Length: 72
Image 1 (cartoon, rainbow, N blue to C red):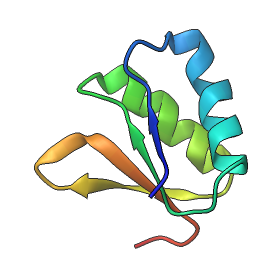
Image 2 (image 1 turned 90 degrees about the vertical axis):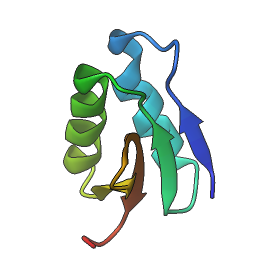
Image 3 (image 1 turned 120 degrees about the horizontal axis):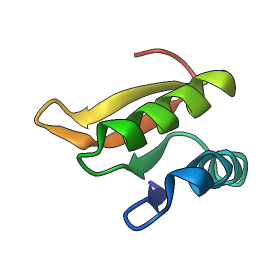
């Protein structure tokens, strides 16, 4: 599964990075946000605006989101 790691990315660039990554890769994809609630919110909001869905990769790992076309 293609993965975008946002560690070290500034909040200002996250929306563009996520947008570009999703449109250049086949879903599902993994986006690593780390433990930052603010980073996770930006990613979830961006994915939602694009019409896709997110869920945690694992319930014990909130720092990794999976993006899918359909809600799981």
